[in-house]
Amino acid sequence: MDIDLAHDKSQRVLRQRNGLALLSLVLGLVAVGSVVSAGRKDREVVLVPTLRAPVTLTSAKVSPDYLEMVTRDVALVALNRSPQSLTYWMDSILEVTDEQARGQVKKALMKVVAEQQSSQITQFFTPDGMQVDPDHLTSTVGGTLHTVVASKEVTSEHRTFRFTWTYNGISLKLKGFGMIAKPEETP
Image (cartoon, rainbow, N blue to C red; front, top):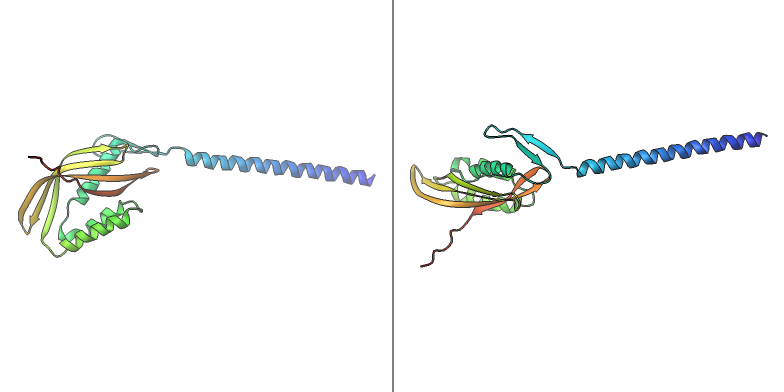
């Protein structure tokens, strides 16, 4: 009789243990599923700039308005420099540069800093047009690039610059930039 009672009690404990193990397994699968689902869901942030209209960011794709605003700001920093602000200029550009492209961009910027650090050459840019391509993560900015030596403007030429970007999550980072060479005129 004691054996039957002991057997029934051990069977009841075994069923409880198995039930708790199954419940733990189901809850663990639900938790993992929730984390995976949250990680794959597109994130969205609404920015309210002071210039035009609210801008919505999504992890699915960069919006043309956001690409235009970031390009405008980066172009103004990248294309305006003076010998007194070269360190700030370089650091500001590197802050918005993608980690994978940072070494190459820094090398090019260091070359400019070395050339202009002890000079009196100042450059400033007055933009007159911009085109953005969110599908290819590129943007072009056109305008007049003014070069001033001491206090005299020595050149004032229309130039076009291309900026390339990387977009990861909701992070837009600079991949590279440079001047687009004018096409050779044929006689």
